[in-house]
Amino acid sequence: MNPDEATATVRCILGPARRGARFDRIRGSAGAIDLELTQILAHFGRSVDELDPIHTALVTLRGTGVQLLTSATPRSGWQAIQGINPPP
Image 1 (spheres, rainbow, N blue to C red):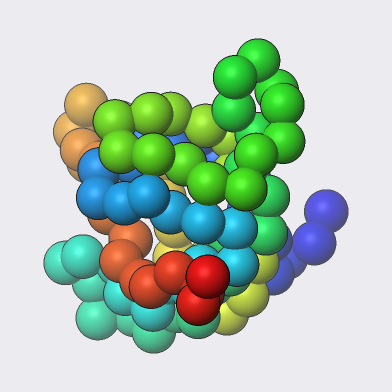
Image 2: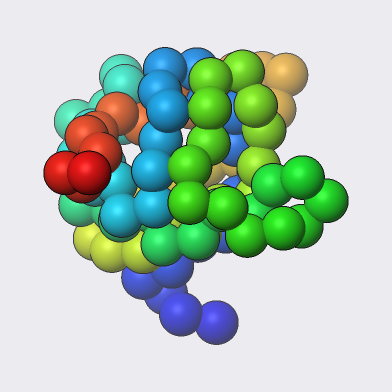
């Protein structure tokens, strides 16, 4: 297991999010992150380059601050990360 990598089930709420996107902020957290979206598995595990809003996928994020990501629970709620897509 790579300590600088996390795989999680996510829902895209603003987007689309493309492979190569860089995330630099966790909403509500002061911790610094620099995460790259390296893989998107959607539609029954098929690799795709882009995740559209309201869709859910298994994604892999790699970089600094991955340890600040948390699992959602009824008590903690959802965690939102924000960033930008790479140029087309």
